[in-house]
Figure 1: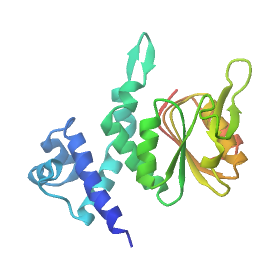
Figure 2 (figure 1 turned 180 degrees about the vertical axis):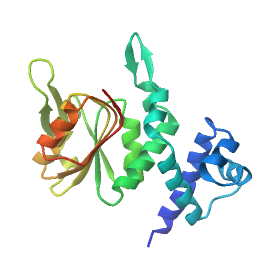
Figure 3 (figure 1 turned 60 degrees about the horizontal axis):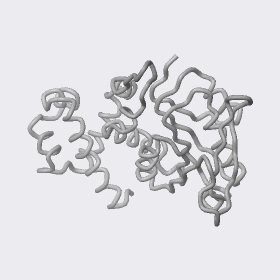
Length: 237
């Protein structure tokens, strides 16, 4: 049986997602998408009325099944001097809420720790950790506090593709069930470094989620480490 706080959080999450969706879609479009009267949806989105737990569950499941996350993410991509600028994606509230909701649906009660690198993906990792009621751990480019012990881990190959990260040793423990979260993947070097840190701490990587991935090398690198439950929400060739 779901805890009362989890049920309330679901109801409020749906209100928040509907409010964000209404920035991009009219109530008529939302009515067509969800099969719920636009008048009722307007009441939900404005907070004048809260959906029941069962209705909230139906709305969220419908949104996750009918909204194409890859297309939504692609629509937020912008190029600056021919380079993709991920800020427009990773700081977009609707993208953050839908991706965290999708991740919760996939991994709820399967993980106790979310591990992410010190990148622009930190806001997403934070929301994912909150959704999963999990601990958030950040791998840093350099050791932080001199009073803490760090696990040094690296991924990739010399001479140009090596990435080194430092994870506070007391933030990962033996038996931790860890989800890796990142904003972007191409070679998989960051994921490799994070996965090795988890292994050295005695934990287990349950899966990996990346918002945007290019090619398949990142996936192959994780598979070589024995991690097969991996997801890219937008894959580019």
